[in-house]
Length: 383
Picture 1 (cartoon, helix red, strand yellow):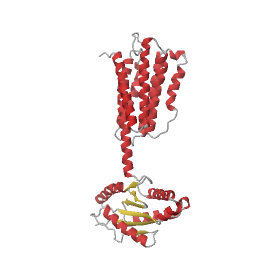
Picture 2 (cartoon, one colour):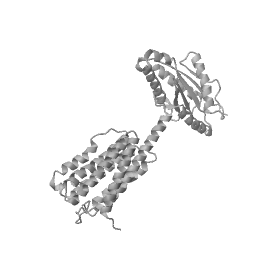
Picture 3 (spheres, helix red, strand yellow):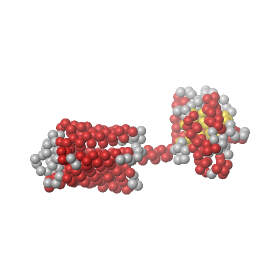
Picture 4 (cartoon, one colour):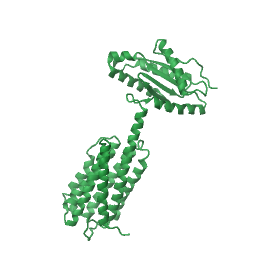
């Protein structure tokens, strides 16, 4: 089947123009998300570059060869910026290097008037930029559960195409005047470009949407001040831990923490220092808690945890936290914590019931003078 280069050229202009409009509205609708902003800029650069390539049919050389390909490099640089922002990385000067290199090479006639040399440099640049995009997507793989593999597949196909072009493109100027005016391989370049830009645009939209969903889920499950889990997340995970412990016939414990005289800290040192104390306490617990345990802020200065351990191990863990708090003086502020815990005694107990028992133990610890660990007075033996 013969592919008409003129038809493909018009299709490419239409696709780029339509996708640019979609991306502009997506960028505005996302409150000016920088990932979509750089993608939009990349599409616009590519659209202008493709239009400039049509000027070859009018006998022009500088605009399509020099300016047009500089814009192609800037378009790849825009994609590089988009993916860097997706990974949370800062924007550097890397995105300008390809455009500066092409502009510099065009100052030499041996390169400027040689189609084989221009094709070689363009292919190498495309491979380097695409490899950088593949690496950035790999770095974001933990966040992009759904879109990681489609993005990788699309980028690898694009990279391999330009590697193959190094060997398959004869880089001999076509005798037939046309909108592109390149070699006979230009038909396949345009076709691949259309398919790539469509796939990449919608993949980036999906990636940004997935990132937003992950961010919203994280916010719904974490305390905004301390970044530890909140009550909702703790109860969700506690159910899983309790079920696993029942299957394995192992004990588990619910623990409640309450920072002693926390109101006086806020009154004396200010709420900012009070917030720092909360963050400091969470850092201690997170450092000492086992990987199987879960810890959360319930509200104010009250925290809770669940750990798959018996009474003896739980008491030792609670005491380690209490002593670490007593030994620390963040910003020269001394504070302490009261702890109450309860360990499961029969399979019918769920986490919520156990937490109520831990609350009674916490009340006992505070009534007994604070800065101590108390256990609910029931022997923790599984039947």
